[in-house]
Image (cartoon, rainbow, N blue to C red; front, side, top):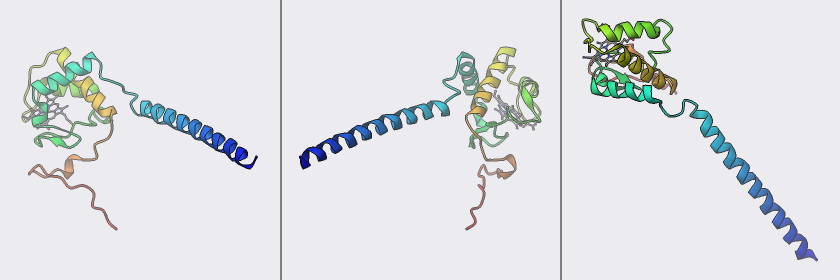
Length: 145
Ligand code: HEC
């Protein structure tokens, strides 16, 4: 009688644990989807990514602080309120004295911009241009205790 009761409780507890496990697993997967709402890159983004690589933009520009240091970090350039897509387009298609003109076509330029805006949506690069030293190193915020 006594051990029968214990047996019933044990199976209830297992049942509850199973429900909690299932609910938690669902939450974890649902949450992952949430974080990844940009999803996989589409054709235009991939084309832009190819141009980014073949023209070696990264030799002078950083994404998330990684890359060359002649030009600025472009991780969040698309969401910069003072810039916008037409600014980027003019900049990329013409170059400046310091940034070369790669003679990209209209489409290639749009592709690169869509790649950069995809990168932009993936997060924030905390490294601002004024923190970058000419040697290519940079200083993160100092942690004060
Ligand atoms: C030889 C080095 C070099 C390469 C390679 C290069 N850039 Fe640049 N880029 C620069 C420099 C330097 C600047 C800043 C220009 C200035 O202020 O005159 C710049 C600026 C920019 C800006 C404007 C950024 C801002 O915040 O105003 C964009 C956008 C940009 N580059 C995109 C690209 C893309 C896309 C490529 C590849 C197709 C590329 N760059 C390749 C050197 C380079």
